[in-house]
Image 1 (spheres, one colour):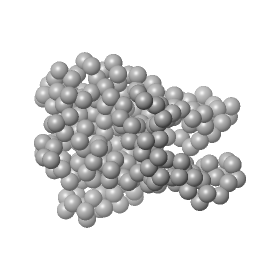
Image 2: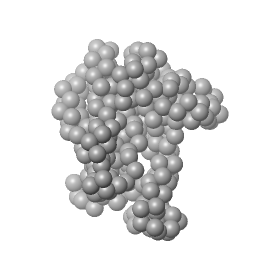
Image 3: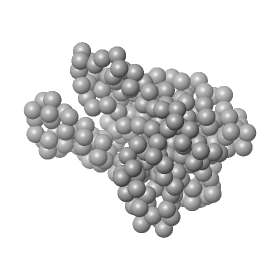
Image 4: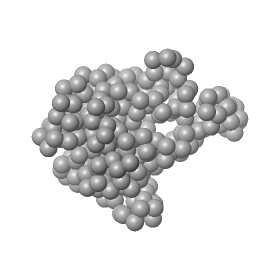
Length: 259
């Protein structure tokens, strides 16, 4: 399928690894002019070279932090009129809410709610004026399957979800859609960090937890980053213009509900 987005411009946060990188790679393959955004220079350079090797195209790359005004302005300076915005930030490691301090909560809000909202504020009106826009927030299945040890992520991402539900309905008539993708377990570095944290907190073997998580999923495996990237690219397509304000689970069927 021709997604109709060749020549469009995209900002992709958290693009140095994992699902952000997978989204950036797929968009580049679709002919989108991608700007990679990440806080880590070395990882960002490695992602840039990896995408070049796979596509023959070297995406732009900017070291930036979505939680800071300076970081967000650096992103806009690199790509002043994006057609596509992918908001993505890794969640905090699992923990006990009794130990979290006020700053922990504020940091989570900055990363997973306030930063993405600020990026939407900087880009959505321009998209509307140009008559095309696709905004994707990469959140987590924890929005629908809350886990106590992920309370920081549950809370901040749920706040973002509520905000998007309101904003999305006001923009779709101008061909600007805003959706959230809720990934489950994927074969990424972030997943391994999560398992390592669980291993350290429980004293259980890393490989045992790793195998259990795959076996407990109806698909009996971890998701492939390229599966995520393809889903994200479709939601950015011309054909997805009638899809907005949705929370799309991509989790191998682990969410047990009907709705």
